[in-house]
Image: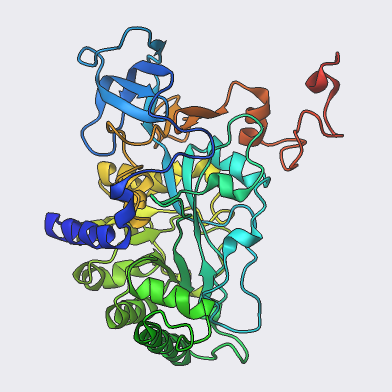
Length: 456
């Protein structure tokens, strides 16, 4: 992305999420500016915003990063705990802009457009997918409804605060604004996924018509609300669907748009311009065919690289070169899992395959971290290792783009949420009996004697 395009995108982001710059809300895990100070020393550090630090130190206090830099230049405060991680790599916690962990049910088959539906009301916080994501170094997820609707509902941005026994409710994973409200976007789709029998559209043209019709209705609804000036007798009946669309047009809710074919991509850009939507294009299998047009629109792309099991006709021209071509055209590129389509445990392989196809290595690392944070409007808080940001990071055994590398630990807001050396966590990283249970796998009925304190 050119400096001009990047600046325009981030300016747009600041309009969409002004509260993030205004302040932060303590998390449900007791976030504090004070707390234990820990220094991880002598690692190879990828900050996702500058050149790699060959022998570096990451200094964290409580939930926040205090400093990051060469080990011989970072001063360790008295009383801090030091951990030597020589030979290991540290990188920012990975950001998945498009996940279905926890269950995908949201909108039903009664209508193709249901923006008022919330995915958070469908999520199972005990789903094993959350632990699998931590095993892959993921710390932030945009959890979405499916793509079988033109507008399937509201997404939720989650932090994987999974230390100890884990959360009891999905609310404990929310990323919140300065007023304490949970953040999320709006999921839209086009192409074959959302084409079906009535009342669903039967053609691409009818799909665009139905979307345009609802956004016009939302404009009219908002005009009536404004004209009422708070007079309850003049206000229109409350409409949750219309409210969500108005939020999108006011840039309060980012639109995350499933789209594959080149003509479908152009349709999204056309609608985004018409209704002043801040859009992130997702999948974009044929983005390489219209890279110049996407760049001119200053719209970022969240790319899927491993489309398995595949079988979608409109993804037949997907190529590993997609990320490289889009990046070289000036498009900001991130990657996503679409979990289960790509297992969260192997998320880094998406960037590795893009690099194999010629994508700049630094841009690919950014595609796993800061680029995704930007696409959620969270770049001021997550996505890179910098003073003042959340202490979200992963410790790896080696180069993140190597197939032989393992995620050893994942830390979220200064708390260890995954540790490969812990047999309980290793079970989710490697699979095995009990890994898919929402019970403690070491206490479930399938546990082996050694797992519950007995002898083998």
